[in-house]
Length: 270
Image 1 (cartoon, rainbow, N blue to C red):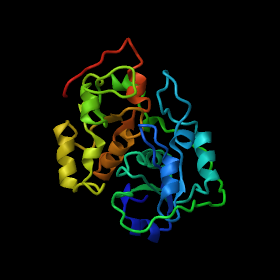
Image 2 (image 1 turned 120 degrees about the horizontal axis):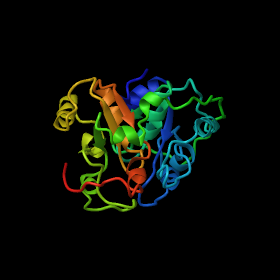
Image 3 (image 1 turned 90 degrees about the vertical axis):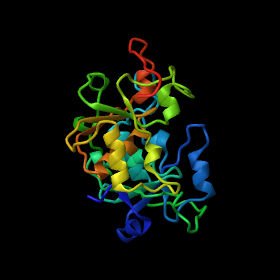
């Protein structure tokens, strides 16, 4: 399988399908951003329509989509189950990571474009890419890659929070019912893995960040969460990039946990 992070040259030489997965927490339209300018040849993948199911307090703001919804959405865009998918956004890949993670855990070849639009200095196009639909068979989400809330609170894994430090500490909370974080979780903001051009920092620097939150061995069990299970996927891809394999996503993330009034909330720094 292709490494989880690739350059644009590598993506194009491999004949991959480019996928633009822009989405904004503040309500701006990712589709409008795509229409204003995107990488030539890229299709737009709608996070809400393809990469998530209907939101609810019981499932979170971006629960995993039904495998059929996921497969139908990608196939309709012209992405086949044997295609290499290279996804990007304008935030260093922290949103596009959701698509890449869901593809990789179901055995499909996919990678993040290192740097995304932040690291791209070439021409963009406003002409939408339209590809012929392709077959894409649904596959179930593997249990080994998904953590239920019981596993999150058990204390048997290092639980990492991919949100910005201000949300982790409870200083701000723009969208979810309660501010703070899951007790015992460690703050590991995914955006801090990236330089000013949206590209990954060197491996030694990334490993030092992991060590600081107690992730030191390849077999260390890790559960990643964020606000709604989107940017948490970026932490998981970074872990894979560095050779860590015992990792899982808590899909509901804080948008699920914070609705549970029976569960404790922690504030302040980890």
